[in-house]
Image 1 (cartoon, protein in one colour):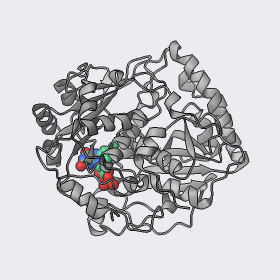
Image 2 (image 1 turned 180 degrees about the vertical axis):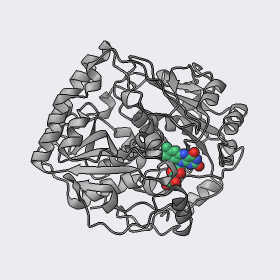
Image 3 (image 1 turned 180 degrees about the horizontal axis):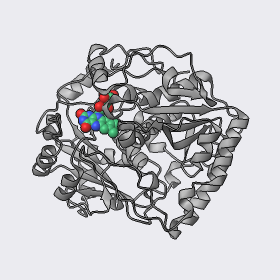
Image 4 (image 1 turned 90 degrees about the horizontal axis):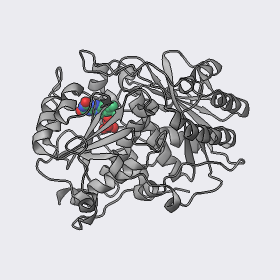
Length: 462
Ligand SMILES: Cc1cc2nc3c(=O)[nH]c(=O)nc-3n(C[C@H](O)[C@H](O)[C@H](O)COP(=O)(O)O)c2cc1C
């Protein structure tokens, strides 16, 4: 049976499961589809530094439950030194900035810890998300993983399942038990299965936009009533699978075509569906639609050999930031912001809005332009506008290379030979040569062939 849920339907019913039906099982095809969805997430320089370990074996699942019971050792101490994010000469971010949690979050975390343990026992499968620490992996690995997690959660809904995001566990223990190479670091775990008691989404506590969004300047709140009132918009939506496969990084935009406020509001909605570590605004998101500020950010995105003229062209930039102070709960903020941006990119695609993630920019300069306080860090940003191009899909590494099954040594699939070169510049060249040849098991068509192509094009023209 093929599910073709619309993206909006999924975004509107996104909840955090607390228990699963214990007899649940996910077919091998279903498992492959979940990883396939992850594979089509964007990644810095298309490096795809992620590796996924799918765990189905009962005993192995028990090891994960044990790791969760042991908890994340970083949470136990309340007095950690602040390790401020450092930008090196290449403007890259050092991700070793884990901070301690305030006492006030401890209860919250303990409660969700119990559910983590139960869900790990009841789930049909668990997925351990890891990324390479090499080169861009060290800088953007957790962000890429966040994007992949968002895709997996959406595809899980599509297949009738839900995912619990588990962060609080002993990573070293897991690394040892599953013989995970020390070149890879473990991000999060997903427990996936059929939810036992599906929660009524209307009863789920909604995050208050006022706590999360600023416009053009730090601490300047948008007038949300204005955003919702706007009526002159055209509703357009695509199936979740199409959004995952057809979203492309766009690098040529129609200048001066603004994004309607209603659509901007829907993007905020999509952002807020991501489950945060605690329901506290340790993440703030800036919407930048001021031409002058966009120009200044564009100036600071011309880095090394990159000119990034696309940053200059767009009517909207979205900048996630997170609190790096001591006692902030921003433990997993790189992943959280990765998932937030990915949700926004997918929802934007469903409106015919093009987007591109930007990781190469001068963070200090951008922080100064919008008065972002010292202790708030910008992991990445993303640009949005109406596309002038619909670029072909850059190739993805095959599933056999990126996915393991029950153990780090066994591959989920007979490994097909992958031609994707690992060197950065060769992979860019290869991308150009292999344009458009990607197929996906998520659907019959080639990636990038939009089914509703004529309607989509019509929509873009308006
Ligand atoms: C964390 C991150 C940083 C990125 N930084 C840039 C960037 O600075 N400039 C750019 O043009 N694209 C950037 N990208 C886009 C990737 O190059 C793109 O996602 C990748 O080539 C795959 O192509 P696709 O998004 O069309 O599937 C970034 C993507 C991610 C996830």
